Amino acid sequence: MALCRRHDWQAAFFQVLPDYLDHYRATGMTVSAVGHEGIVDLGTFDLAGKAGKTIRTAIHRLDREGHTAEVVSPPVPQAVINELRDISDEWLTTMHGTEKRFSLGWFDDEYVRRAPVMVVHGPDGAITAFANIVPEYQLSEITIDLMRHRRDAGSGTMDFLFVNLIEWAREQGYGTFNLGLSPLAGVGEDPGDPAVERAFNFVFHSVSRFYDFKGLHRFKSKFRPDWSPRYVVYPGTLNLPPVLHAVVRAQSGGGGLLSYLR
Image 1 (cartoon, rainbow, N blue to C red):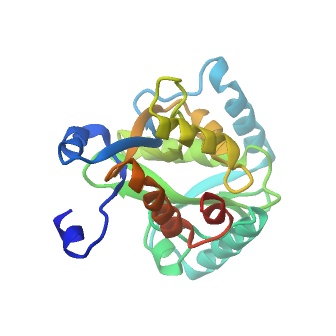
Image 2: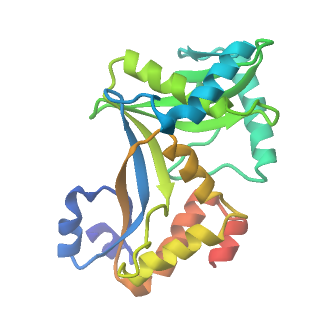
């Protein structure tokens, strides 16, 4: 904050954990929830019961059809990188989107090459989906960054990918699997919540043509994670619009959602 003052900047903090919110508030900053991260306890995860039936059905069907999953260890061979890039480009076209930035990675050959990648092979052996794996070194936790699939990947392919990821992480001795942020999910749902968070709830339900917040949250909820809140910290409500504009600009580099928020 002192550095920002010297440069006539506004300081803001994004995706803050709940651990030290009182310290931020003590400086006069305002705190608002921006979503929840889904964290799967690998020691207790299972697909038993009614809640896991849909995923079990998809996994068994894909197994019968000859789909397989494997982790490709780094350095990922160039032939695999080329195939993953083709899938990534097709996925971006299908989603009518562009690469995100800032709190998310983007497809870069050297970045993808340096970490393990879980891939799903179709019955013909071709890769149909992938996710690159990112370890958390201070916790016994692992997460993923990019998760992409072919346009014609079979129904349930991403469920198949994530179940295999979770089982692999458990075999490697990790304690938790972080599914990443569900932006705006669970924010501002109570009429007594702050006005800013209720406004975020409106955005959550209103911008599906730019970003499917609700669909992403439904997908992650299938794996029954514990939801941990994340926050944006900023210097007062009047400064929130430029802070949000800066975050969206950093993440998207422009485009439809940025124009909508502007």
